[in-house]
Length: 62
Image (cartoon, rainbow, N blue to C red):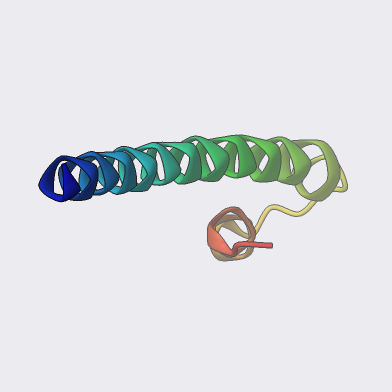
């Protein structure tokens, strides 16, 4: 019985780890989309034309 509980615990931990990494990837994607939207609506719309500045703003996590 103890081995069964140990195996179930490990399976549960693995499932939790995989779901956490998937959620993290979704969060990053959502943040990247929000960052791109902010750059388009605030930075580019304000007249910034320097591609290096725009690229840096898109790539810098907040």
